Length: 514
Image (spheres, rainbow, N blue to C red):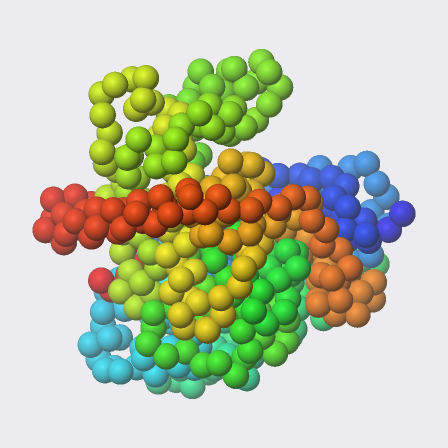
């Protein structure tokens, strides 16, 4: 049997997932990781290349321990987007940050002040704002660590770094490089003129090659992978996840329910960004871009709720041999639509040009423990993730003119039947859940397969491998109820943002420069 290996450097964990050439998951190695703030640097989120590479090596070895690694045709990588790695002239990592590193707030403000209209100009080229882009972060490094900046010879995204570790070749793909903000959607290449305009190095950007192109063979000696294994360009987690869901045609729509929730809609590359309300990214399918909404921390909020409040449920689930989330869903099924009026305040609807969130809270709790308890709070969190997704999707549909009747749902959240049904009820659309729910890893394996010649291209791989497990039809009576709940939630969230504005509460997350 021959295999394809996907390496996924996600926000909350690193993992290696082994597939056969028919898209069946064979084995996985996974470890959670954390991204450490730099001492004394507010809102920083560093990426430790040395420690995280050792973690990924352990994941690779766990995933491949029962096979002969000579049978792995190709390996590819995917990662959280926005995170960047800077290298010296020998290809050694100098400095790296994870996706929501927000240390460069002052630099974002300075850019907006010193270069009036520049963010809008760059947005029309890249579909990105300054907030989480590479440009202000590199300016921060230049200001605060000029000795490191002086040595910088190359920049890449984190998935590119994984492949560089394996092959020795530093290159980028459009889907992830696009999130750097220093990029042209039209050309599908880094836009060095952006760097030139603000005074950072213009010669540090590697070539962009399309997802599925071969970079070389494995040169690394730590991972245990065979040196005849092809190393193939991967991409951003959301775009590869979309391919892993069969979302490869113009007009296809998906909700990816992971650490963050992403709502994506495919559209032709000719559609250009306009008012900075929506994020636009290159797809891994050539000729397409994706309009994207993001819900912050939905998966992390659930993990927090489980770990902070559900110790007894963990023990019960372990005793019964089921997942804790499955047990919580079982209890939440008895809770009516609207969770007795509980309104969770976590992620706001995406406002890409000026984006910040209220202080995390639950509103409308009562003190009757038979009603206001872990089950109803858990269900309210599931409902809230779906409500924010529905709001983001409506904004995207308005921009793109797309209004489909079906949403593809994947990621860890789609394992929950209650969550999947709730998404259908809130949006009023049919929800399809694929057999392989961890779609990002499957999309990454597709890229490896394209490089190995198993599939012609990403679209062909997607159509060959994606299969469907279940469908959920909306309960339209519940949908009408959720329309009213959405109105109440939006009004409540606006009030909570005012408390942040007044300094009474602290924002869960605020884009740099606000």
